[in-house]
Picture 1 (cartoon, rainbow, N blue to C red):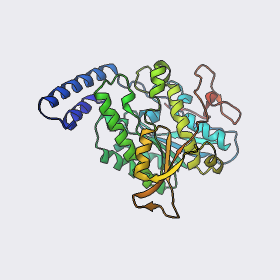
Picture 2: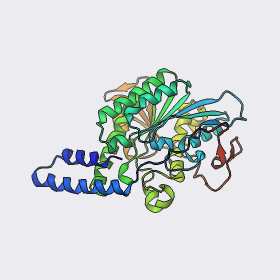
Picture 3: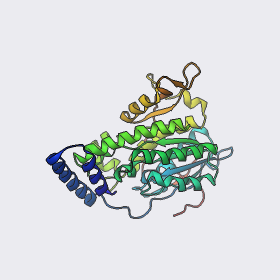
Picture 4: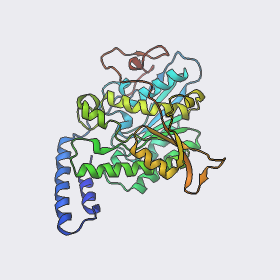
Length: 345
């Protein structure tokens, strides 16, 4: 986390004058230095979890790729089954009763600018669905929103052109990270939501689906910080990743075309809005899915593309970390699942 760049950008971009700028800049720089001391740098890479989930199930395996940053890679956990990719592969396998072949290309510390290389590698395995989690490092490094979104939309377009469905978990609310103190916390919250809304518009325009992650872990972290965040107090724990995966899973299933999942778990207030409005609402409501929609047979209205908001129910809870690892099948609980085959370091 390059907190110095965050502090510098905050001081310049605050829009204040004279002594107020100096005082604000001093406070923010001090907070950035403190946060940098408290939040440790990444050490060992997270476990991979690559392999086939549900190998005994019938049918051709669904190929799933996971792209993005440390949140996509699962940094902060110790077992492959605790990573978000493994949990999503297990959930898809169980719900669709098909094997799922998982490939993780996410890199700890990656920014949106690094997605191009990940997409190139992912396209070699001809994915059916791609999950992208990215944006936090763009905020901490203060990459411009337009630059971050441009790289993300290029990734989505390339994957869609190759026939893959794409689900993007938008930028989380970094204002929930406790080592970051106000007013720096308030600024990172604003930047996070701004990027998340822009990501939503760009991804849906490019034919993908989004799920807002926002402050999904915020209330839980406040109540049980040792349970939902890992040892560094910055990345989620296994339980924290389970919450995020539970929010993403219904959308992944819907994107894969499971008709029954389109009818299950939808809130009564799902509705259609213009895409910009939908993006703003989703950024404020974690767990909200946004996808393209039509009104009267048209994709666009006076305010641009139509989009549908859905609040979906989660289908699985938090994994236990004290149980033995066993191969997954339709009768094995999520928390017991691991892939077949050899895991790579």
